Image 1 (cartoon, helix red, strand yellow):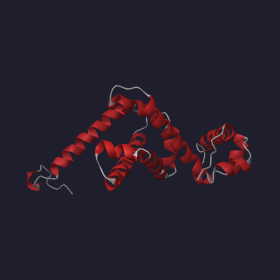
Image 2 (tube, helix red, strand yellow):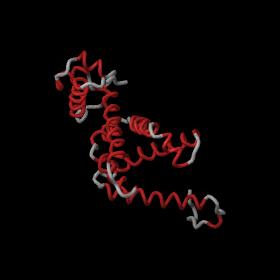
Image 3 (cartoon, one colour):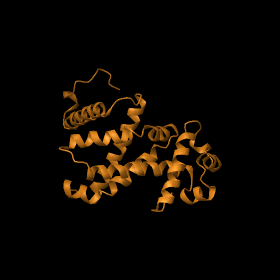
Image 4 (cartoon, helix red, strand yellow):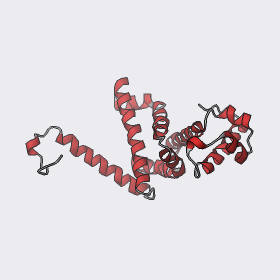
Length: 201
C-alpha cells in the first residue's frame, strides 16, 4: 500500500521518490530495488519513504493510479465532439507513460495494471450501469473484461515495439472489434458451414 497525504510536502516527496524509482528500474529488477538506493538518489529520508510506500511495488502502483486519475480528469474536463476523439485523447495520455507500463511487464507485474484499471472503472460503476442498463453482476463481468482488454492492449503495443501512435492503435482496436463481431456471428453457425482448414487443430 501507499499512504500519500493530501498536502504539498507529501506529494512532492512522493514525486521525487517516483522519479528515482523510474531511473533505477531501468537498470535492475523490481525486487532488487532497495530503500537505500531510493534514499540516495531522491534525497528523501528513509523514514519518509517508509511512511509513503510500504514496498517498491507500491511506487509503481501509485504511479499507475495517478495516470488513471489524470484519465478521469480528462474525461470530465476535455471538450470533445465524439467518443472516437475522446479515445484518441486518452490514448495520447497512456502512450506517454510507456516507461511505467514497460517496467510492469518487464517485471511480470501486469497484475498491477489490471488492478489500477479495475479501480479506475469501479469509480465509474454507477454511471456505467445507468448508461448500459446492467445489474451489479453484469457490471463485474464487463469491468473485468475491459480491464483485461486494456492490459492486453498495452502488452500488444509493447510487444510490437511500442512505437505505434494513438491513431494506429485505434485502428487495431477497431479491427479487434470487427473480429469479435465475426466470432459472435459464428457461435450460431453449424460447424459444417464454416470454411475451416482440413486440419484446423
